[in-house]
Length: 203
Image: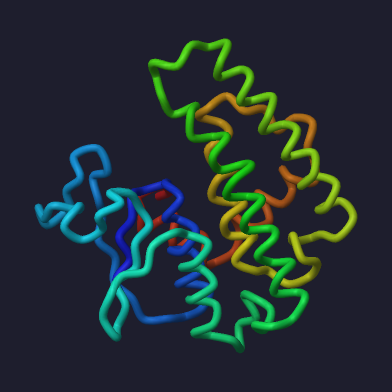
């Protein structure tokens, strides 16, 4: 398998999951603005959507969209318990979390990357993120240490990835002690450290 990624982008989530799952894989960096891979290929020729992540499969073909990719990877290594078994209520709970993180948190961060957006508009998105993080904070405080309790899952990798953007985008986590503790806890995991280092995000 080959993961197409941009350092620190949402593709960090499947990168972490690949390492947590212990799967064999390659990576190829993508300049997402130029739409070029590190080998000079037109990224649109690989992924017509033009964004990361994208996973080139061993059996051929391409899988896109982070929540789909991480579930696929979890199912490749069921013994790691990165996702509950298909068909169980717990699997749907995981999908519920992935959708919430994707649509309500990740997509609320997206406008903050736009330097042309007026500050008052960015402030409104930060307020929206804070409301969504209140839901996460309450869940972690009640169920922790991870989103589904004691077991680290692909949802934790996704939440860690998007919440990692908070500092650079001036999203305050001051009111969310359980979330801050979660970030620190996940950051210490060997697979997470390895992914961060491989992407040049830590020494």
